[in-house]
Length: 70
Image (cartoon, rainbow, N blue to C red; front, top):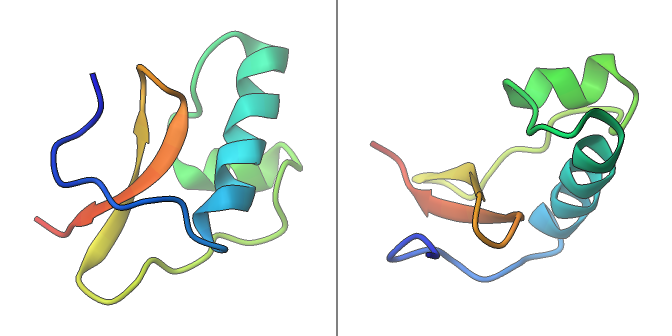
């Protein structure tokens, strides 16, 4: 099930979605945190979400979405 209120893919989180997919294909799990995508070489740096938002992985779709910050 997708997160309620999740934003659509943007130019920022599309590369994150691709990195998460490649990570999941290789390790058969989701990264523990965004920094793990950097340390394993899937991305160079962690992008910043839009103001007032945070990135989350929707486990049902494996898409990185933006949610309101807590």
